[in-house]
Image 1 (tube, rainbow, N blue to C red):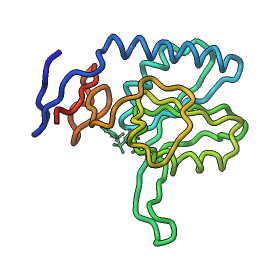
Image 2: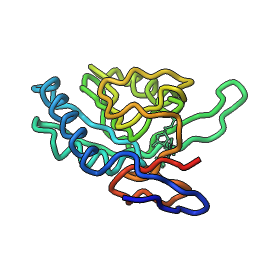
Image 3: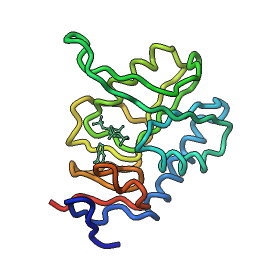
Length: 178
Ligand SMILES: O=P(O)(O)OC[C@H]1O[C@H](OP(=O)(O)OP(=O)(O)O)[C@H](O)[C@@H]1O
Ligand code: HPA
């Protein structure tokens, strides 16, 4: 692994593919242990989480379902501020154990807007799993039930994360060279 160029920026290797798959397997084992008998519904937030979701779901060893949603944010009224809607969420969450799958929680804003909408459907449990989080960037604190890695407040690329559309296909995670 070496420094790579994407658009106008350089990125250096940060988390290897082996470290990612090892940590994700551990997370899946813990979730399988904790949620045995609950038949959880995993909800992966697109686009960024597609690779993480595929990897973690492979290692879930209990009965479980998965669904993929795309969040679209638009400007609401003065009083509502930004509004977020989920496309593709067809399941009824009432009484279900729901586990959100995110690639990254950065400011926390996305989930702070989305989780209340899910709570509204009265799931039995609503849990959050994120591969990455940046504690120094959080402005909207989110309780993360299962976390892969805590990372510094630097822009990341790869393993689903993009820089202006590119880099999602990289099997490892890179950090912006500043
Ligand atoms: O905690 P936050 O600061 O809200 O950031 C986290 C969100 O940002 C990324 O999605 P993005 O909106 O870039 O869309 P993408 O997944 O399609 O790349 C990521 O997948 C999270 O959903
Ligand atoms: O560090 C990041 N990289 C790519 N996309 C992101 N979305 C939130 N944080 C990031």
